[in-house]
Image (cartoon, rainbow, N blue to C red; front, top):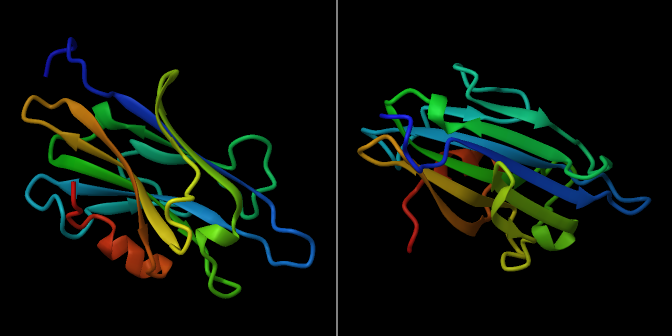
Length: 177
């Protein structure tokens, strides 16, 4: 790979939401990134990055983690240094899961959720999860590496109803166009 490519090098995925009203348990949303190898781009993730786990090579990490949405600005922020990922990785999927510690919660019960995906100052995608009100988790971004080593972004928010553990096993499956 030369240094002249036009592919995506680094990405920031940010998530925010308003705190739960008084008397309700806190809402906790978590960003998760799953990496996939070139020989299994839609199977089991090679590794997962989330609130208590970073990528082994340090290329994907959570900069900010909020358990309740009480932060100022963006509550959860994840950085993906795609250009530093080893060549064996060909796909990265980023998702959001709603913690289910205090009973079933869906996006319709989360106050003002918002998502932003950007590279540098360029916003690649924004969403508010209104299209998937009954989901408990969602994939929000997909990055794929081509034969020249360039990374491309595929937008789209796709809802799931799995619990957080099951979601990590199915989030990378093939989805429709």
